[in-house]
Image (cartoon, rainbow, N blue to C red; front, side, top):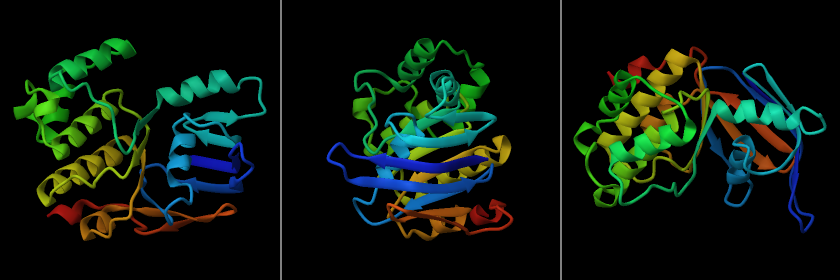
Length: 234
């Protein structure tokens, strides 16, 4: 479960983005993050990713993040290890192949994954034919799938995505949604993604909607009580 309590965030100019808002999401959730433009969706994702400072408390995977605590930095380090973030415009090295990009990121993180895990990632996202293709020669949709591969390399428990589906055709969207759904069911992870899309496939797969109404109001609506979405892709 992810539990956020009394979250506060203000810009330097004094504008309050969030004022003592709280919400919680259960394990295994696939969550759409909505709200009007400029309301704070990307800011919330950046806060949850550990990129943007905040005041308040998170509880996730037995890790308690309290900005007032002396243990905050240590807890944040553990929290980030369980978190992956795909921004709206993810950076990929254009002159590396997919295989080289994966190898570089694993080297930097110091983590090893069995070849079968990596191969399964590529197969599930229909990327095996691009393993030795330069990233700059891929379509935007394929590059976005590469970004998803990089996010899942360390088997995160909390995955955050900013408008992740905009470059996908229907076939790729189906592949990606199936992959995310299966991962959530297997790992009981949580995925939160910002979106303006009303695509019926996305709407069918999400389990919860996290809606930012204003600085003081964030609501959580359960979309599917059973959270079992296997039937969507039959």
